Amino acid sequence: MTDTNGAASAPSASESARAVDYLSIAGSALQTPLDVLHRHLDALKAAGAALPPELRTHLTALNTATRQLDEVTRDLHHVTRAYEARKTSPAGENIDMAALINTVLDELRPLADECLVTFQVYLPDVFPAIHSHEGTLYAAIYHLILNAIVFNLPGGLVRVEAVGELSGVTLHILDTGLPIPQSEWETIFEAVRQRETESAKAHSRGLGLPIARRALAHVGGSVEIAHSGRGGTALRVRIPAQHKDAEARLAEVQSDLESVHRQSLAYAHDLRQVYRRFRALNAELESANERLEATNRLKSNFLAIISHELRSPFATLGMAIELFAQYGLDNLTPDQRDLYDQIALGAHQARQMVDHLLKAADLLSRETTLRLEPVELAALVQDTAVASLSLAERRGLKLSVDAPPRLVAPAIDRQMVSDALWQLIDNALKFTPAGGSVLIRLAQVDERAVIEVADTGPGIPPARQTTLWEAFSQLADPLQRGMEGIGLGLALVRLVALKHGGNVLLQSAPGEGSVFGFWLPLNDARSEDGQTPT
Image (tube, rainbow, N blue to C red):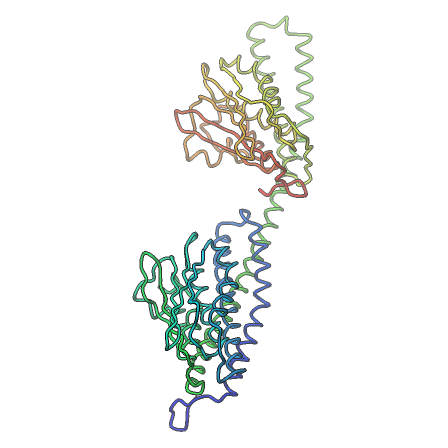
């Protein structure tokens, strides 16, 4: 506001009141979209690992911005509360400083407990008489102690010590947090300038410290940083026994309100930008989920159709081979018998591939239902291993089991888990040279059951390990095409583990063998529809 000569003039009381009314309305208006933003952020946080990495980065930024907006909204409420206190009692009132400080500490104690910060309070038995504005002093002391809590370290300390003097009260507030560079000892008290500096982002105090300094200035007091170093930061607060005339501070009040007004407008603009970005990211996420669901349905339907179309001719071929074995093997020459054995083995392997395709289609389908029951895992491991003993002997391998008894999974699909373990055993027997060994291990780690198959095979290069659990990965690797299979076995293991709320494990290095495995929760970690997000 300026006079006819262009000089600044003091604002009227009505203008100050209108400014405070605006801040009150702005604080209330910000609260509604903030509440909506919090609900959406909670929903996105629940999605967790399902979010793509670039969306998780945006989610972290949104969460930080929302916390800052919460602080600004709270600060706006404190500004209006302090002004209302001065308006109600412009000449001030007698203040019980001990009661005021303890009220602030009681209000902030839950936050201190949450941040693992402890209070140490030293107050004199008798305070000097203080005649001032209680609401203004409350806002100042509240923000100073709040700052000491928020920027402390877990397990830290906030020490509040008051010293009574004839001229008033000196309050020392010490924290054990990170030090503040001396170059920023003054700038952290400047609201608008603080928001524009890069260094302030590392020590951002929002509007709290600027409000505290302004509030103390309104009653003739002051706050400054006494020291800041490795042991933390100490603030020295001086509260005079008698506040200065409010009219003499009216110009400063106007400057304070204008500063906060500009800050609130900037944050309101940021909030609109954040909300628009949030809506765009949410739309992108929904679109990505829809595309993923469509791809999974297409893949599942394709596998099911192909598998069913292949099953009939292979069933006929298998029956013909069995009939041939019953009636014609005795009259075959050795070369013919070898040829027959190759045909029978090839037909068996092809039938296994078709079965794998059907299982993959079934597991990829959302309609798959787990047949859950309590299962004693050592017995399941032993039974599955026994079925592979003859194959291990034919290939000249030692197959052993280390499975402690009495480990029960309360709710798993026995057949699915057995099939997954069989795939790991078959994979180990397939890639381990004659004379080697395969060990099946069962162990409990915390609330998980871990099943592993260790072999003495050639090992797997790190670059190859990232794709092993993907379907048809073997088809894409020309070095492995001499081995039978189409690369669905390990993909099926992963699908089974994920269906049960678990995941897969792999440790391997060239020349050191491999350990493939999976873990299952020993509690029911699945969602209500029996599915686990993948």
